[in-house]
Amino acid sequence: MEHLDQLRMMTKVARLYHTRGMRQTEIGERLRISQSRVSRLLQQAEDAGIVRTVVSVPQGLHAELEEAVELEYGVAEVHVVDAVANDEVELARDLGHATAFLLSELTTAAPVIAFTSWSQTLRQAVDALQVLHSDTGYVVETLGDLGPPLLQHEAARSTQRLASLSGGRPVFLRTPGVVASPQIREALLAQDPYARQALEMLDDVDIALVGIGSVDVAPWLKAGDNYFTERQLANIRAQGAVGEVCLRFIDEDGNHIASDLDDLVIGISPDQLKRARRRWAVAGGERKLDAIKAALRGGWVDVFVTDAQTAERIAKRA
Image 1 (cartoon, rainbow, N blue to C red):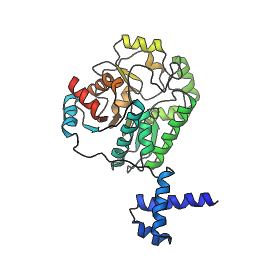
Image 2 (tube, rainbow, N blue to C red):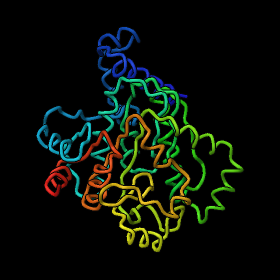
Image 3 (cartoon, rainbow, N blue to C red):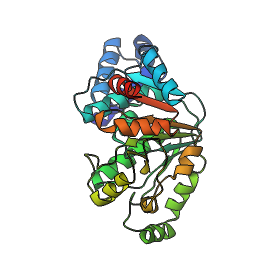
Image 4 (cartoon, one colour):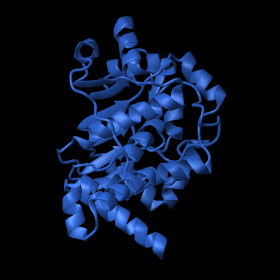
């Protein structure tokens, strides 16, 4: 009980300070505790993960580079951030935290948010997000489950958190993201009204938060484990695929490559994604350079968040 009382006090103090903007002295007077205790409780709340720190993205820091990418690819809005990453995992964390700040600045209504919960970078963004000032009704997953159970659990938890922070309701897509045959896909959807409802809700999306991937198996996935096999990926590469957006493969010009693999995916369709009013993508790194350029060329993205090194390379190669 003592531990729970401490957690309640930490949460209460954190809400008053971070959400309502009250000064520590005001909080102390309101709760009838000392200012020094308020300070300790705030630090404890941060240590316990109740409060997540988000570093703001300075406007204009990479203005020329952002404009170069926007003009070259016809993207409405590009945000370039400085990353301090040594590997792909750290880069996902850096980009995720920057995206969390940018999302927190949104004030427009978004009745339906389509969320790619299997994206490592977007999960990092949601984990760092404190509040989303958007009038949201639903947060709908764009794809079924990918990878092992632990990843599936993390994806569902991220969807739940985004819905909670935005004041919306989560809509889960609890089916495999990739199945072995079209017949299995049809059978799964025929027996699952919730999955059918989720897919129908993707017809009218206000903000789509999507990932951009290369045509290989991401390090946190396994070939054939609710995902494509190495042979399937090799075949689609032979057809000219250089990347994918929500598991829809695209060529170097960003054109969707229609193939039998589309019939194996349980998730948002290319047409549904293109109809979304705003499409946010967050990606960076050497492995995804060709995929990023293709996604930008093809108009799959109108708000793009990346790191300075990636932005320089795609602008230079363009």
